[in-house]
Image 1 (cartoon, rainbow, N blue to C red):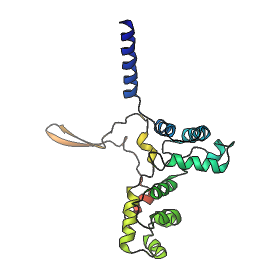
Image 2 (image 1 turned 120 degrees about the vertical axis):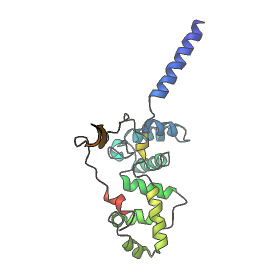
Image 3 (image 1 turned 90 degrees about the vertical axis):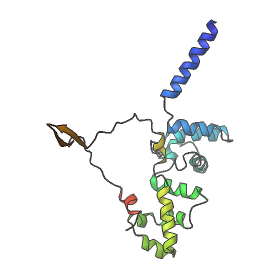
Image 4 (image 1 turned 60 degrees about the horizontal axis):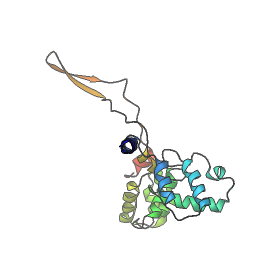
Amino acid sequence: SRSNDDDSDSKRMFLEGAITTPETLQDHLLWQLRLQPIAPTQRAIGEILIQNLDADGFHKEDPYVVCHDTQRETVDAVMAIVRGLEPVGVCVRDYRESLLVQAASRPDAPPNTVAILRDHIDLLEHGKHHEIQKILRLSDAEMEAALAFIKELNPFPGRQYSAEETRYVTPDVQVRLKDGEFVIIINDEEIPVIGINPFFDRLSGE
């Protein structure tokens, strides 16, 4: 009976821990990495690369520096494995490379999407779609299809596994009933300064 009680307590503690502790990006990637049919040395490199990722899924430090005892070609091979795990597009330098990795992994990507992200990302960020069309000789329909596809990609794939605590929304404006009249109160102190990345703003057109 005592043994059964101990087992029940252990199961309860495990379940409580599983419920209250969110899965981090590193947890999710490490779990997938352990299922890959690769050599132990590659798995060890993969673990180092995964632990070196920030909340967005990007390298914190140069991967060739953190894996300084490993040949560059081997690091590249393991990075390719990690990039193919879910979420696709992590283990990269920045959002530019993440978008490129995601597009290259998708067989349904419209023609020239990879070329746009690889060779003309600067023009894309500045909303110079017509210049891209001229260089790649794309029709309006082809350019629109590529842009629509790019907008579906996640530039920061790691964020969906963020372990940050829940943040409650503070209303910018409140409407209260005072002395029989509705009064509008603006919360000046809590209103943040919000900016939009020009790259994503311009994807919708010039």
